[in-house]
Image (tube, rainbow, N blue to C red; front, side):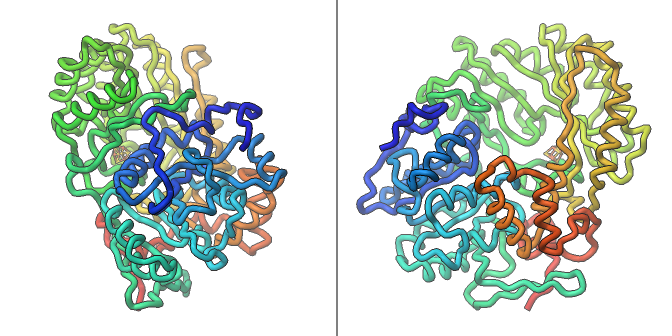
Length: 550
Ligand code: SF4
């Protein structure tokens, strides 16, 4: 038994949170949900919490969790030949029948391999015997196809019953994968072959029973779909220490650069009564007092005002804190904020994207900047002091004037509203399934130059705080998210090279060197794409698949 007190933040490894589920493994199908990052980050993932509670609802399933340990514990496990374990029962990961990994962030792919390595589990699918590695939360699964036995593409709530049904019916791994490959949402890479000819991907299924194309799944009625009412309450501070209450999924808007819109397609709302019931239950079960109303665009909820009124009526006495992080800038803001303010602290976050109305129009982003000024004044009168603003740079059609306009805009907003501004400048990454998935991405030098133009345009005031994207990391994100199956060799080599120096896993020079060794010119991933994509065999139901198959 490891003495966790000897390691930093031992609370990460305890797992005796309120509402934790502990079941015997005997006569149960053991599944471990793995998050390839620290506990404090992974526990903010709503998907992980939803799946944990759904799987533990099955009488014959035991679902546990595992996270990437801190560096000190990783070192200890490696040096002492001990295996990575689940939180609940401290069972080593190789003893589970299924490990379900969340891949919502490309730069965590190396951590995923590291977790397998720490567990003594072979990295390549073909070298594993019985254990199934399931991957989810990923848009383009291809760069991980060598390491993951089966992906679930879509919303797991819609596929959980079928998944457990297969695990119950078959005990042999091959039979399990065969059965899963015929069910909507499941993608078993070994059932397909891909060929790249003249820049176009041709997809072929090797076995008749496998589905083709792969259809993403989604929950039809969010009101009926389970929510983790027995909210796990960590003993340690996690990164976003408030309970996200999902009020809608998907987004009715059409911003050209947005991947989330396609990932969570179609747009669905939860009823006011169901949302209030969820908050009430979680409040009772967890002791949490801070909630955030989660959706990609809260203003688009058709009953948002009724919802805020209902929450105020129900929770005013309890003084819970509510955040509405994704309000669109429109008339609603001025009406909602004074109400929200009565429910303790609120914050204002606005994704403006660009300071130029014309460019914003091209991006499909609907914001009336005049309304932002009006809303900011109302918020200031409520004694709120900060606005968080997001901008994005790196569009092909962007001019120098568009970039310097950011500085002029912030100066005016700061002067007229007297609010402190926390500004985040991000880089456009053409992500799979966004409307601009085929667009090119600016190269490193161009992006660095654009960022310095924006910085030079900013007024020097302490009340304007700016953080800028890490350009090389954004490019790496683009490369990994747009890569095909062949890129797995790069991921594997970077993993091996960073095995003893974990900080190297995100080192741009190392990735460049490994790509060069594999005869990959990284710039090809940044070019506009006119043919199909490595992920064109997936049908999101949102856009037509661009297929060439037999
Ligand atoms: S950027 Fe926001 S508002 Fe636009 S489509 Fe995406 S989620 Fe919707």
